[in-house]
Image (cartoon, rainbow, N blue to C red; front, side, top):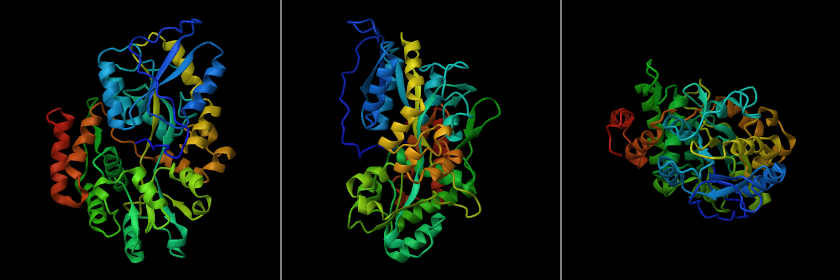
Length: 421
């Protein structure tokens, strides 16, 4: 899931959704590139910079989508299914890439079209893999994200930073403190579950040998992941309103002066947020790798971010491609990272001093992005996500063995379009 840049005070002007094709600017014959994307705090600056660099070759315009990712997808799917030619450029959640590619709603990139993000020599492995489907590149990685373990130094004291979920829960119980973790019935629940099963050593889907996918979910590893979710939900360390908690709820609770929370699992935007709100409090923030499930196996942290896709029905493909090649330049990537707290996808910026000044945990983020776990790469992803939310919410009702059986059954039916979700 993409982290929201809630810290940014500048608000992007909400432009009216286009009712017809992109076409050209009436005054000067300049192609208008309509960019459908969620409202992000760094948008104004990168659009202004790329329009200046275009020197009249195109005019990039943001068409603001709803804040909720599910609503974003719904609006895009309806428009694309209707062959809406006003959609030139799409800011796709990384999990939409395979669905939109398989449906023919975005066009694949040809070799050499993408100047900055066309190979894994240029792009960190996790973000690059998220842009591929069926042997083709349908997305241009724009930014990336992975969750970290955040902690209050003053509360943890001299105790070791927990490295596993069991250690994290044990330490929280000993300190009589809370772990701010998402638990609402939303995409964030799928993010949590997927990271746990991948960290345990299995996956939700795997290749079926015939060019498709099938449900994997080895029982022992999945039950272990579900046991962690159950233990958290039943622990006094869980957020007070775990079943309704989202990323920003967690951020605000952890950031509060009397939070009573020593730990938080969240995206990196939380650090620029506290730095802006209370620089002294920011000094008390520590960060560590995403907790392991198996002590002997590195965690597979969640992977989020945007891929850029070109709408299949646009009349302005060349202009949209030119905009992509500007947006993925190091200068724009640096802006997205420093203004939005969302790391660059470029290997060349993995140790960039300007970014590291704002995101001092950049080396850890870069390390995790190389091994981060993508959510299932399948055109049926949305149905799989809905199935996970249906069975595993609220987390306090999870019974690892029986929940495993119920979830596996529903996922199999969802993958084969046999479930109503």
